[in-house]
Length: 422
Image (cartoon, rainbow, N blue to C red; front, side):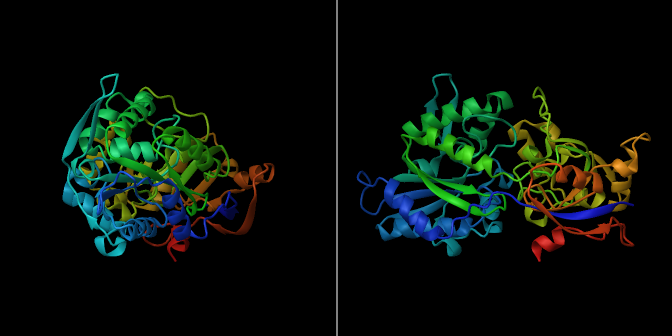
């Protein structure tokens, strides 16, 4: 059907080699303990998916606090995830490898929240009741571009405070004004929470273009938003990307919450699908087919609405309750709506190609196949993509080529996902 070239893209690769040492160094520098009572109970936030080395980071944080004589515990901080139940959120942590045994700290989960008050603009501020009544809170999260809005702070420490610790009630209010107000709401609500709760500091995680820990930085309450803004710029400078800006057909082997909060990162594919929000000019993907839902997404197919075509296999794996709860809380309903569904990958791909129209020359089709939107260093692409890459200043190497073919069951014969998990 098509000759696909295996291309290895090169992205910024800053990498932290001594994670344990950096955690202890940052906590030693930024954690203020003078007002804490002896044996203080300190809540540590946990919840965002797909963070590299998260178990080690949480474990070393808990160890540091215990060595000071404090009693650390984890609180799931993930808004409405896990079916918006206390048990479901513990289960999500378990699937991430985060348990009392692996981290060495108790997990206390509840969906009960405390109303801290209202911002000057009238926005209610909620916080996990267990965390709020602790002697201190240590906020840990990865900082990166958000999948639904742009702002001074996006996905990171402030979002963990407002939406993660806010549980489903806080998340619903923050989302209720729509994507265009999200950045403003997150900054205002987190500012209020920082002033009216026992938050001690933040520990920000930055990852490079290969999904590896690039840095870990302590953040004080006083410099919270300015420091997070600085770290967000750093994170964005290392983001992976598709090889070219204009793509006729993008084949995504797997989607899921383990790769992006929206299943497929809108920053990567150039699709927002939010009412009232203009779509980005680039990257411009004409047609998108997603073939499977990762097992590690546990049925949550949030983001399926970003695709044009999909397989029956993916739909069969979809847990509608968790998917719809996620979409309703975020208010971005189009992202959970189903695309065209076909029985096999072969039928899905062939239909997607057909949808490009009768006038397109198959020899000029820019087709790109990726494992998911998180791991983009190895991709498959047609000759027109390769030729455009050669004219750019991007760094890449060609590893080989093969024909896009299918097995007897209609599945694509050669996939990147197989190498990713091997």
